[in-house]
Image (cartoon, rainbow, N blue to C red):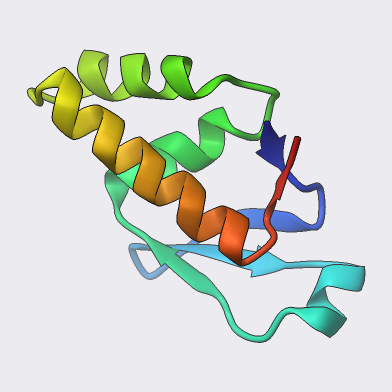
Length: 88
Protein backbone atom coordinates (compact mmCIF):
# COMPACT_ATOMS: atom_id res chain seq x y z
CA UNK A 1 0.00 0.00 0.00
CA UNK A 2 1.09 3.56 -0.52
CA UNK A 3 -0.11 7.15 -0.50
CA UNK A 4 -1.84 8.26 -3.68
CA UNK A 5 0.22 10.66 -5.79
CA UNK A 6 -2.43 13.37 -5.37
CA UNK A 7 -1.45 14.04 -1.75
CA UNK A 8 1.72 15.74 -0.55
CA UNK A 9 3.21 16.50 2.84
CA UNK A 10 4.10 20.08 3.68
CA UNK A 11 5.44 21.58 6.89
CA UNK A 12 4.08 25.05 7.58
CA UNK A 13 4.91 26.95 10.76
CA UNK A 14 6.02 23.70 12.41
CA UNK A 15 2.79 21.87 11.49
CA UNK A 16 2.92 18.77 9.25
CA UNK A 17 0.05 19.00 6.78
CA UNK A 18 -1.21 16.58 4.13
CA UNK A 19 -2.48 18.66 1.23
CA UNK A 20 -4.41 17.49 -1.84
CA UNK A 21 -3.06 18.49 -5.26
CA UNK A 22 -4.36 18.05 -8.80
CA UNK A 23 -7.68 16.20 -9.11
CA UNK A 24 -7.72 15.43 -5.40
CA UNK A 25 -7.85 19.15 -4.69
CA UNK A 26 -11.27 19.28 -6.31
CA UNK A 27 -12.73 16.30 -4.45
CA UNK A 28 -10.99 16.55 -1.06
CA UNK A 29 -11.94 19.35 1.30
CA UNK A 30 -9.36 20.55 3.80
CA UNK A 31 -6.02 19.26 5.01
CA UNK A 32 -4.87 16.61 7.47
CA UNK A 33 -2.54 17.57 10.32
CA UNK A 34 0.02 14.98 11.41
CA UNK A 35 2.15 14.66 14.51
CA UNK A 36 5.78 13.53 14.22
CA UNK A 37 4.97 9.81 14.18
CA UNK A 38 2.23 10.40 11.60
CA UNK A 39 4.75 12.30 9.47
CA UNK A 40 7.19 9.40 9.75
CA UNK A 41 4.55 6.89 8.66
CA UNK A 42 3.24 9.12 5.86
CA UNK A 43 6.75 9.60 4.43
CA UNK A 44 7.35 5.85 4.56
CA UNK A 45 4.07 5.28 2.70
CA UNK A 46 5.15 7.43 -0.23
CA UNK A 47 6.67 4.17 -1.48
CA UNK A 48 4.90 0.81 -1.47
CA UNK A 49 5.20 -0.62 2.05
CA UNK A 50 3.63 -3.33 4.21
CA UNK A 51 1.88 -2.74 7.51
CA UNK A 52 4.50 -4.86 9.30
CA UNK A 53 7.26 -2.57 8.01
CA UNK A 54 5.44 0.48 9.36
CA UNK A 55 5.19 -1.20 12.76
CA UNK A 56 8.95 -1.89 12.66
CA UNK A 57 9.57 1.74 11.78
CA UNK A 58 7.72 2.90 14.91
CA UNK A 59 9.50 0.32 17.06
CA UNK A 60 12.88 1.52 15.79
CA UNK A 61 12.08 5.21 16.33
CA UNK A 62 10.05 5.21 19.56
CA UNK A 63 10.06 3.30 22.82
CA UNK A 64 6.70 1.56 22.42
CA UNK A 65 5.51 -2.01 22.65
CA UNK A 66 4.78 -4.00 19.53
CA UNK A 67 1.12 -4.01 20.56
CA UNK A 68 1.00 -0.21 20.79
CA UNK A 69 2.90 0.26 17.53
CA UNK A 70 0.54 -2.15 15.77
CA UNK A 71 -2.54 -0.35 17.11
CA UNK A 72 -1.13 3.03 16.10
CA UNK A 73 -0.31 1.85 12.57
CA UNK A 74 -3.73 0.23 12.14
CA UNK A 75 -5.48 3.41 13.30
CA UNK A 76 -3.32 5.55 10.99
CA UNK A 77 -4.01 3.31 7.99
CA UNK A 78 -7.74 3.24 8.75
CA UNK A 79 -7.88 7.04 8.93
CA UNK A 80 -6.03 7.48 5.64
CA UNK A 81 -8.05 4.74 3.97
CA UNK A 82 -11.34 6.30 5.11
CA UNK A 83 -10.23 9.57 3.52
CA UNK A 84 -9.19 7.66 0.37
CA UNK A 85 -5.50 8.60 0.51
CA UNK A 86 -4.18 5.04 0.10
CA UNK A 87 -3.82 2.86 -2.97
CA UNK A 88 -3.24 -0.90 -2.72
